[in-house]
Length: 390
Ligand SMILES: [Zn+2]
Ligand SMILES: [Zn+2]
Image (cartoon, rainbow, N blue to C red; front, top):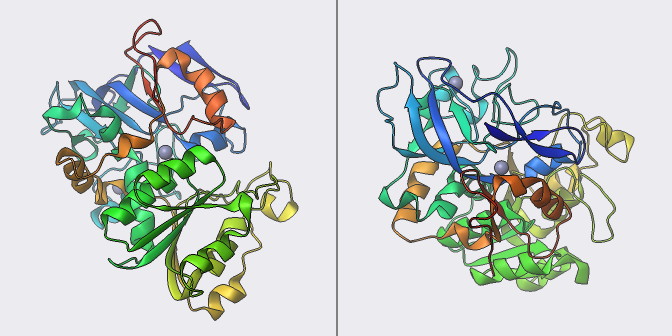
């Protein structure tokens, strides 16, 4: 089968690799019809992780079931399914408690949590490929309604970024009628904004510096805060009568940098602490890592940050962090999409066949204007329906 393979920093190609196949009776084999390039793929693409050469990217996957193992009971051939990016067994202690983001069986012993095509998250090949093996298929696969094919660009967001954005808002503790500031207007930040709007926020602010992203945020009723035009903390204070936002979300991660390009892994965290009111809450879903050998300074190389804990403590704030337990949310978010209450595909800028993925990575990695979210469609050919959305 064809798959997008990592060959070293900023080197990927679509190669012929052995077909994904049923290996255990509980497996489901999915023919991938939609798979996203994610911002967290870029950490690996840029060589800022220990992702191994020869592995396949892709953890935001949707497709059609083409084969099921003998022990699969619920999922059937022909079903359109969303596969959560968290690989999880469903019956370990953590999974039983709903913590599928920290499954104890899907990674090596001593590590909790796994994902498809992801550094340090187990051996699972990614889905930027024609086929994907989904282990523990009955537990993993979320079946999609009859409009799954027409609304693929919406449903494909269920595997990661929509639940992840929702989780950021959840961890912030936001209640209806509160204000919230979201640092990072990339795909996850946009989903956090959509989630906050859907959950009844009185005021949603999105901080970024890319005009295309700020425009997207405004399209769903958020206030765009351009941090290249002045301190984002001051701008949040102006919008909140000097009080600060009730809640905040970190949707950038460890490669955070200021508008001048200076990288500082604590930049967004410290600005959040300053932007959020006394006793407010923060949800951090941007990726941070225990080691970062490619970091510009020694502290960050050890996975440490100059976090303003004094101010955080003084303000009595709370913070939740970590990857999202997709299964906690994806069923309900699917129903919101099915009922046309939300349309997460508004951020999609490009629908492309798999063979254009290497080029798409280049553009997305460079944060080129107009490349806000790329959905790859492995079944399609270049001469087919490559689409740049206006
Ligand atoms: Zn992702
Ligand atoms: Zn488990």
